Length: 231
Length: 231
DNA sequence: CCGCCTTTGTGATTAGGCTCACAAGCGCGC
DNA sequence: GCGCGCTTGTGAGCCTAATCACAAAGGCGG
Image (cartoon, rainbow over all chains, first blue to last red; front, side):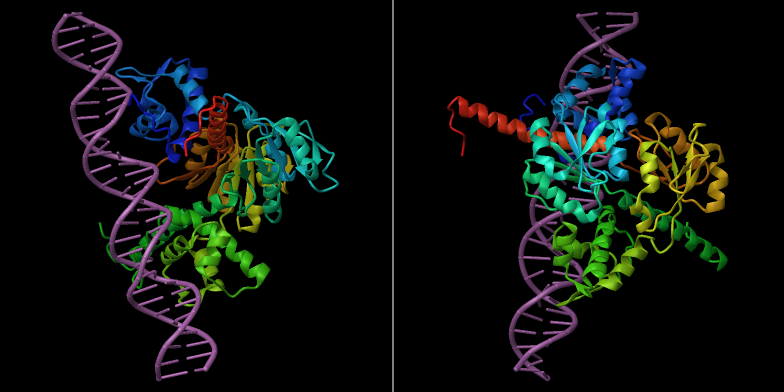
């Protein structure tokens, strides 16, 4: 460790830091623990201990051998590394079912993300109040972004509109986009898009489920044919 | 290719098949195309062409050199591979903001996933009608699962209840779980859990955004100190 | 203050995916 | 029926991430 000046945290590690953060918060708030071993943290986060240690080592090695990690300090380190010491106002475009749910989703505010503006283009939605905010027309995006310092754009529109919304976000200088629409959006390389596709997850589940069912069916067929199952 | 009897499709490929599926449907329905090259499909799916070809080769090589892939046939193959030729009735546990949005989310039904039952434990929610379904008490899970052949369980509860709901799902024989609660759930190894954590995605965006801002700030600081920027 | 027990930090190894590059194959026009 | 241009299928190499295994380090009891 010592001079871990290679300030490149692997992507896979970055994706796990929020899970550690959540586990640590749980430990600190609900169980009043002071320290945690990589083994414990691994159990809570659903990964293995070696991975936890390696991941944390990228932050610079804050553990004590024979004891574990100081929870408070670790919380501080991860929070800082993830950039959660400052807040990132976010805007949602598309106030349909999903947009509304996201606007009222408590998980965001609990984790320091404030939704500060909602946008749509339909006349019967613009002006409506949702989750304490008045829905604005997408044409007023730039103004709101400048006023509120919005840095994250959330796309919750139908797939057809996703690309256009993404371009509008990019135009007003937003560099981080979370896309819930089931479509691919193209953006310049300096813009970061993450996507959450609800039905893709179900399709992946379907694949694995179908696979295990197919195996069961094959076994059954073998059994009926009186072919002894290989080991 | 030929004897691609190794019926092991890499996980990464499985995760992309739904994206190809979506792109192909778009091509077939909206543009009436008959064939597609790996290059085109790659553009639509936001990946590179070699990856498309390698992925499709795991299905057994259905392309024609010099021409491309027959869209109809490819659709059939992917649909079958993903197990989407049969339908997978799904149940949602937890009818809060998120559960309601998911229950009315059209993306599911459009892709062949029917939500056939909603469950909660709160008296003021049980009995309510949401998205055309009457919310049942979680105690009636087994009955509904047996009657409707439910094979996928969706957790949309607060994090505290997620583990308990997961166990109930497992008890009634559900092998595929989609977890929207921000918490890790432990299940037996033959049960497949996928998780969607909305705020983790934002936290990951925050990491990369903070990183680029930090770089910008450092540049700015250097500029002010009149230190010439390297390169 | 010494030795034992626990737990970290990390080099080495293995596995999995991605990308490249190109030969092989196919259709089409002449 | 032949050659040319296009596109696939895939081996090879590379890179990232996961896992393993163990020496190093700290704390604590006696």
